[in-house]
Amino acid sequence: MTGYTVTVIRDEDLWAVTIDGLPENVAGVADYPHFSEIEDEAPEFIAGLAGSDPEDFTITWRYESGGEDATEEVLQYLVAEEELRRSQDERDRSRARALETLRKAGLTQRAMADVVGLSPQRVQQSLSGTDESGHRGRGGRSRTPAA
Image (cartoon, rainbow, N blue to C red; front, top):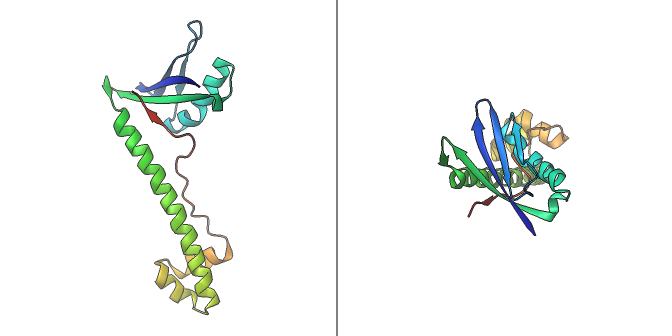
């Protein structure tokens, strides 16, 4: 499988991305206003340059700032952030199951709120399906540190 190294740096008010591993006659450089766009858009950008599908290659991510390699620290943070998002999603699913069970058992919304640490209003929203407090973290492709 083909592999590319994507180096991300902050350049003035943009995130500059350079892609190593492309054919010599292809310039792999792009700018992004927001860091969060890079993970989703860079694979598609590479696929367009390489004439392939994002599933046909791997990306090794590198992060630099002020000439310092910050890859390990940024990757650790991104992994921790994803783990937190997954944990919060599981907590939310568990809480919803618990609330439904407590509702069937005849507890009041005030009592259920006391069990799960929410306000009675939030319990009512959750039980009615109108609770839109979902956690939207960073998802997408996993990142591989540079060698």
